[in-house]
Image (cartoon, rainbow, N blue to C red; front, side, top):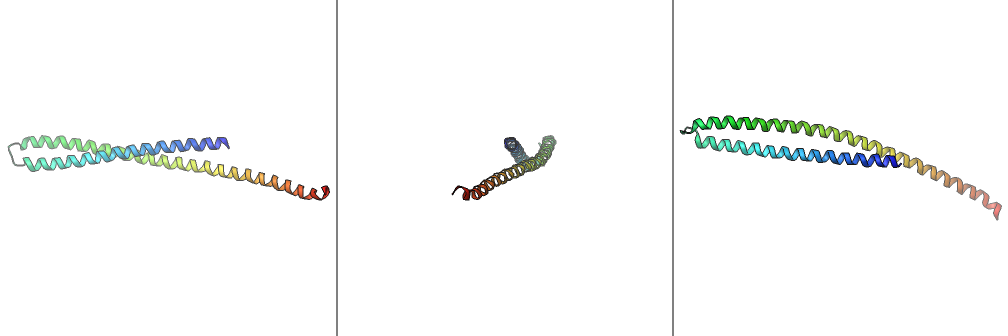
Length: 135
């Protein structure tokens, strides 16, 4: 029984670690999404400000640079999505394993309870049967 309890605790720790990793990845992803949104808004403002002006040649270089940044952000978001999916699969597997151990512990506890109940019943039956001999 101790080994099952130890395995259950160990699996719960693993579950918690996976949940923390998922949370970190989702927070990082949300920051990147906000960064991409802010960059897109900034690009829109710059286009409005400098379109058709004498500084439009600088705008082209700026747009190329921001496009590279946006593609890097999209790539990072894609990697984070992939990692989050993998962590969720691992979480599901870990949870399944935890449930197996918990069910095994419950079954073992039921067997022990039945064994104790049989011993008590046997004792009470013997006591009841021998009661008449002692009176």
